[in-house]
Image 1: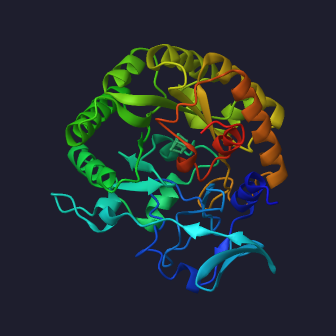
Image 2: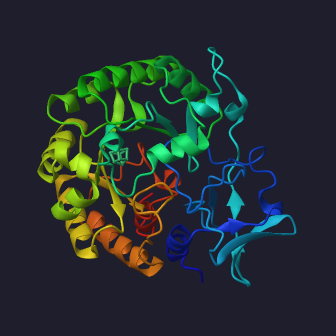
Length: 377
Ligand code: SF4
């Protein structure tokens, strides 16, 4: 029997490639990558349309990370995409449906695909401003390729209009697959950011009729009163990109971010946010694989004690990031560590918060899949 969690970990850490036939309908019938923020592939592929993600037979969603040197590849057998490890057939896979709104335009004439993209099966993603101030001082996070992705693909409107975000949300929701929004932006002036975010959620609520918008908001690290202000926008949950739990590793890997938001600031803010948004309605994001298992699990334990959830992305040493060319830990490390993390989260009985984020959103994280093994969906 296939261990799908381990297989997903291997596909994310080794990457994957595909024959031409299997991806011939990507960009027409099936959803293609559109690089809304970061690039997660091991190699850039400017002229080639590739799947954004795909499903394994048990419903696990996996992000497609191109690596033409990977032993994992997809070949078309009887018109069906089949996953191989070298010559050994593993299982069938399925690409995801391309949203119809990807071909539509907003009232202002912008292509909707350049405003918001669907991540996984049901997560409507917007980056309101593809910008981060840390790059100008060469203090960007070591794993981040935001600037290089924007320059290489130039595939999005870099500063989005609140009205257009509302319009795209309505169009995407009308197709029936989307269940959550996932909204983030660059590191910008905090007061200005609150105004931008308030306008965006006002627009989404107007276009959709939601009182509380299911999904999550990941602004620059929210602190103090800003947390209350974000709650008033009507978003269902608030996220914090803490990236690395261990204080010293965090300062080394995120030199710019750690200057303005310390490890302690994050913990205090997450605690406050749980009080405002409620248990299970706060997410802490880690890039998993940049620090030892021991400190990562310490973080999982402390965050779970606070009543917050965790989204640990599997690190991709992607082109354009400072750590490009390195490699992530092996799949076995990810599968074992994630199962231990799931045990901790489950023991603390943190509410799953699936109305705001679920395993179908998570092509690049394993924790929700590990929690699913425990019956949390
Ligand atoms: S804060 Fe770090 S991860 Fe976020 S955009 Fe800036 S450099 Fe990238």
